[in-house]
Length: 128
Figure 1: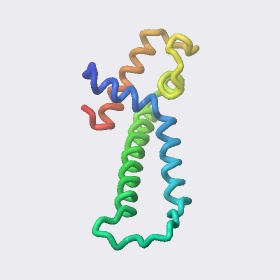
Figure 2 (figure 1 turned 120 degrees about the horizontal axis):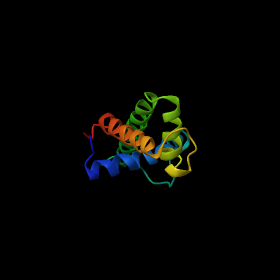
Figure 3 (figure 1 turned 180 degrees about the vertical axis):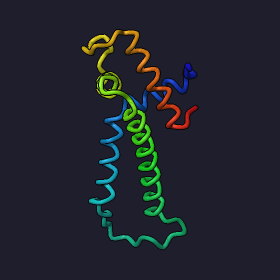
């Protein structure tokens, strides 16, 4: 099954940013846990619109989306064999060129593994 171009590039970008997503999630969690509100001497919280609650909802939504992507990547990656996992890790997560990865696989097999991984990831992300 070939992916439509827009889905292919969206899923490829998500797979390529696996380590970035992990770092982003850690930063978001630390910003929530260790960041105190700035004291400016002005009263807060008596407005019709509560900006603190809105900011918290936005952060929680971003966290959930980040966790959803990470979970989909890990679930897809977990079902591969050890050699294929190593290839996907080096090629997609660490962004090494396919030709420079020294594994007992042909170029065609590497392309097939990448294609199967991206299709399964698209399914896990509900893109197709």
